[in-house]
Length: 147
Image (cartoon, rainbow, N blue to C red; front, side, top):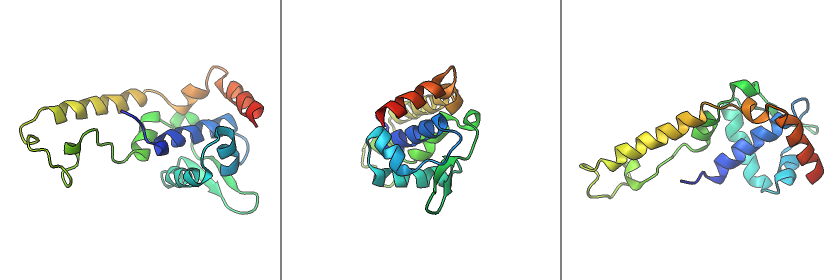
């Protein structure tokens, strides 16, 4: 299983904002820090804002900030909103499924159980866990050195 860039970038945006908690950050800054597409980041930020993980500050000196405390941002929930179609196999989607054995196959249930366990495992952790134990300062230093 591989997360989409949208989910990957969602987590990265939250980590970056968590490492810079007391200021408004631009998508250009995040894009340059990670060397990733600003265009894609804009869509990621929109997803995060729609689910109230980040707040968008409009205007000339605008940007984004965390909208929740890091302790309240569960990683599994972020992955779930950034990956709304986590179809591990074709039969997860009734509309496009063409698998002939789907009605009698037990694999779908097993894979769903594994997917649920994956999300549950991630939900044991929060953004605060990533930033804790000096992580926030270490991350800020890495981003500053890269800039």
